[in-house]
Length: 294
Image 1 (cartoon, rainbow, N blue to C red):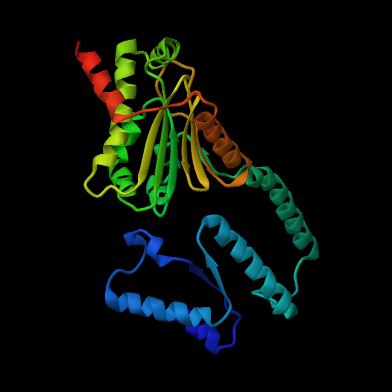
Image 2 (cartoon, rainbow, N blue to C red):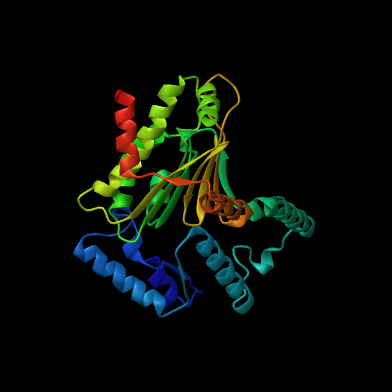
């Protein structure tokens, strides 16, 4: 293979290996014995030389930067342009300045942790976020479409040991909150209350799966959320609410690390710690169902 050929020719090599193959989704690695043995053999050979381990996009980016910088310092090379061929010094200076300009423009985005933004449903790769995630915090009004479209992922998440799912929903018993949200979503207050309670029941139902192993908790909070939040470990998805009556795509931000993710983490923690959140129990849902039928 190319790696072995490079080693045989004495070329500098760097291997970037995912730290824990067991955390990868089945479609991201080898499952059959023979290919898996070859993969393990390659990993062991790569570990014996210049090798970096990674477990997230950020750690991979950091590892690549450090490794390439190391090779440039320790084993400098002329690259594709041979010294004898010469180059345009002015053009090289222009390119370097352009790179510096782009680096400066990217710095605020890196500080914020912004990975992607858009109004398309494809802005976020939900399956990739769920894969290997251990903690998921959710804040929204009721998220009916999202819940049903991610049912398979949520079920798998609930069945994974040591996972934690925390959900904060608006309090359907708070008249001011219900009035605000019913206007926002153009539905009757009673219907809005039903949607919120159905969402609470849906999340708590994952606890009743025969092989459910995750820690799952739902809270009602006396507020009308001004954004939707999904926080997966060190990543976050924030969807903004529209103030227009017309339906359409909303701006969705994919955040990984940075000040925005830290802010969202603190916001969610504050909601649970300020004394206003009320844990939802199976008894609450039973009483609410009985009241709805009266």
